[in-house]
Structure formats: structure tokens, C-alpha cells
Amino acid sequence: MRALGELLLSNAGYVSFTEFATEYVGPWAGFVTGWTYWFCWIMTAMADIIAVGVYIQYWFDVPQWIPALICLVILLGLNLLTVKIFGELEFWFAIIKVITIIALIIVGIFLLIIGFNTNTGTVS
Image 1 (cartoon, rainbow, N blue to C red):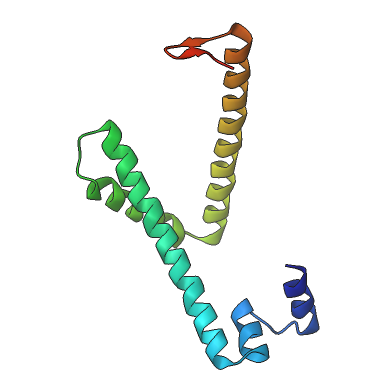
Image 2 (image 1 turned 90 degrees about the vertical axis):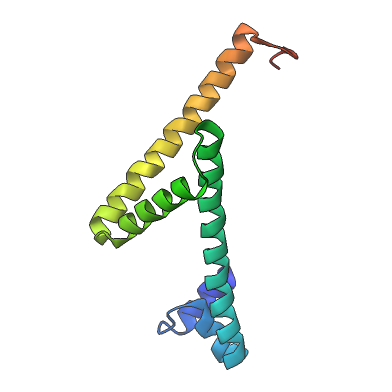
């Protein structure tokens, strides 16, 4: 990251890291880097949407493609909003994640303090 920062400071006209690859390694490297980056994000997004379908299918008896499609439509809708609304949504989603993590830590400490018993033994 430091090296990318130094490259960016050397020429403030760079827009993305693919331009670094194009200038310093060659046009083929910029092309491959850009498309590989795009492909990785598409694969990650599809894996996340499939995971949503699997999780919902665990609780409800629905075909896996229905919650995946709903998730895809919701994500598309959120991304098509204005930047201001999208930023606000990102803030609230981050707050939800932080509160959830804190709640899980508190519940875990509480279970340790009371010595909660499970089928396999005491929580430790």
C-alpha cells in the first residue's frame, strides 16, 4: 500500500492501479489487472448472494434462487440511489455491525459468568 501511495504521489493523474501496471509493466498488464480485479469482485458478489440464498433456505422452505434474486434487487436498488443516501445507508449498516459485535461479546461474557451448560458441557 505504501508503494501504491508513493506511485500515486509521483503522478497525481493516475486514476486506478491498472494505470500503474499499464505504465510500468505494459498495456497487457494493465488490461489483465483491470479485468482480473473486476472478475474477482463479480465472483465475490455472486458467492455472497448464493450464501444469502443458502441461509434463508435453512430457515424457510423456499427455492434458493428467490432470496438470492431479492438480495440482488435490493443491492441494485441501494447502488442506484444517490451518493448521499448510499453513504447514509453505509453508515447505518456499519453501526448495525458494530452493535451486533458488541452484543455478541456481552452475551459471551454473560454466558461465561453464569457458567451456561450445553449438551456437551459448560461454556468455557
